[in-house]
Image (cartoon, rainbow, N blue to C red; front, side, top):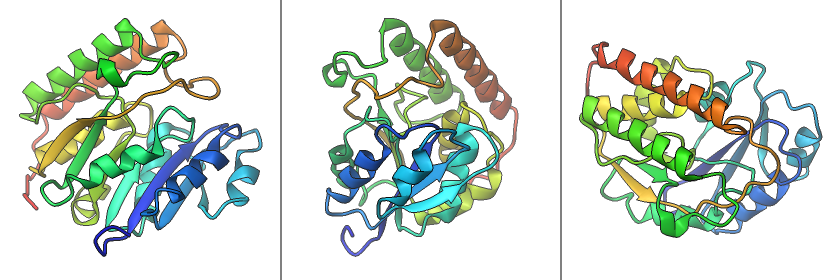
Length: 240
């Protein structure tokens, strides 16, 4: 726990048998995590078996997609502080402690992988991906009057349970463009949001989303379309 608040971590998993067991233990090793929810999104390898060897709560989500897996995890989380992250070794579990420093002042904390000083050698964040994330993030920031944003694809995020309940029923995206939808809903509901830099390392295994420049480009266009579409939607904003 952190200051008498229960901490939950959600890890979406699709064929992540190589590292998910280690990542689960890394989060428990921080000393503040009460619950790890590992959402198996129809893995065909030994992901399920690796999860079940740990203390994590195993959930299987049959609807295929990054967004569906995270949405299921967010529904299942029992924590007062709910984190989302990746099980592929690209993030440092200890960076979770950075987020906690902002808990007293913000409802939501977004991680960003675009800080040059924290991008490790071999990380999947070349100049094209970095520039693309920054550009799309700025479109989101200015069109939706958000805080300073530099990354729309970072899974490492934290949201308090009360604001989470306020947006759970509004999620519509089930695919790889879920992250900007999450951010838009938080901003449009006038939750207090801030973005902080996190370490970004070389992942273990192959990326399912940005394995090629063409895939990354298509995802960026899809995210921009989502951001523009939400700009035309009226949301009943409600501050926490």
